[in-house]
Length: 447
Ligand SMILES: Cc1cc2nc3c(=O)[nH]c(=O)nc-3n(C[C@H](O)[C@H](O)[C@H](O)COP(=O)(O)OP(=O)(O)OC[C@H]3O[C@@H](n4cnc5c(N)ncnc54)[C@H](O)[C@@H]3O)c2cc1C
Image 1 (cartoon, helix red, strand yellow):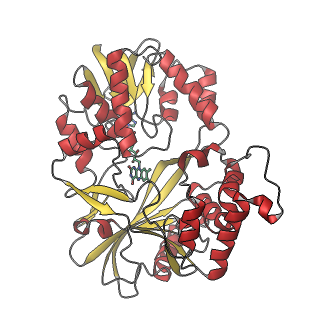
Image 2 (cartoon, protein in one colour; image 1 turned 90 degrees about the vertical axis):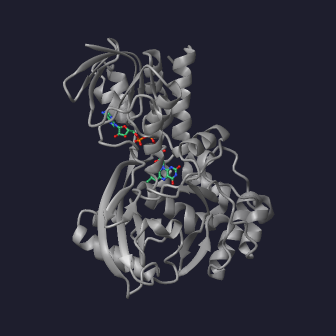
Image 3 (cartoon, protein in one colour; image 1 turned 120 degrees about the vertical axis):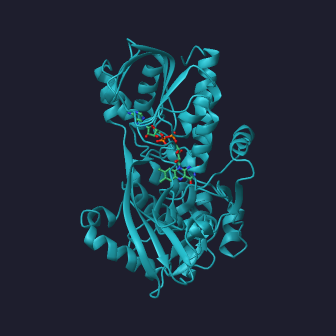
């Protein structure tokens, strides 16, 4: 049996960052034949580079900025977000709650009045709620008021997550929903919006090679390359051993996991029943998406970076364009899109791909993303089984129970799915570094 100090499972950004920051004494095992995990660019059709839905880099942490610039020197191009919400045939900048100008007057009025009532109920003869919100829906209703919830927050988030917002915990809003001031909303209702509101107003993207350029560059920068095409098939946490798909058994001192937490628990042969029960309660939304390549001049909405579609009559919740951000993602004279589906009508239609495809095309034409003259060169339906964490009532206690158990047994589990969290690429790089720091410093509460 081979001995390794640190076994890292998964060469996505979290695992790569952990290996990079450890610098030595690790074995990084990856089941695929290349690094990147979710962050992976595929050439779908004669030079159409598709990233598996939009993957735009938002770098705020100085250390991570430095790392990314070091492995991709001079390769990052900055872009200013061109994202809009489609409603009743109009487009308003994202985030919706601070940009209702341009929508039909009655919607703008409903949104503004709703927000004023929610923030100043006493001025409307209403009583302010005294108990904390029960769930996400109640939480956003109190934060944004009825209009914004009815037209955007509720339909959009239900389409994205495929569940009722009553099933989502109230803490989700605190963590992830951009919260404009009253001033921003009023200004936005009259066309004086600050489009920069929200977390992702500017982002960077590699000049060449798609988003895969980042994990590939990181994989080159680590001293021992990942062992590809190798899957961890079982783990004995007490005995600190792992079995690989090659049949090898190895012993490790410390384990860093970045595959889905639920899969990890399934693979741990000595996981106690209560940990298995906790893992069974963790939920995630699956996202299906079409990568689409077209040739033609397009229409008025062809060149937005991405568009949110809260209305139920559109089968997708978001449609984005790789080539609108980075023209060389598609061959000359062509454009490329990713169209994301999860809840709403998509649930039934995904069972009937022959009906889904024409519906997607028709909806894209109705939204004027595609024109009748565009020639569709390919449409490929793909899925991301784990796409968005569902922050329901079980989320916090079950996740904590599992992570505490792992920590007590000398294992760290982090990253988007290893940590079962809502995190971006920068978070993944930070978590990989945190895992390496914990290992090196022998932080007592971790390893
Ligand atoms: C739809 C979608 C859109 C996103 N858009 C953005 C965006 O625009 N900007 C942004 O910053 N972030 C975005 N993200 C988030 C970003 O993709 C993740 O935060 C990041 O890629 C997570 O990296 P990771 O290493 O934690 O996980 P992963 O990429 O999932 O890596 C885990 C790795 O483990 C490997 N593995 C699994 N099981 C085994 C096994 N048994 N043995 C060996 N290896 C195994 C997998 O193959 C994979 O390579 C998006 C995510 C999704 C789902």
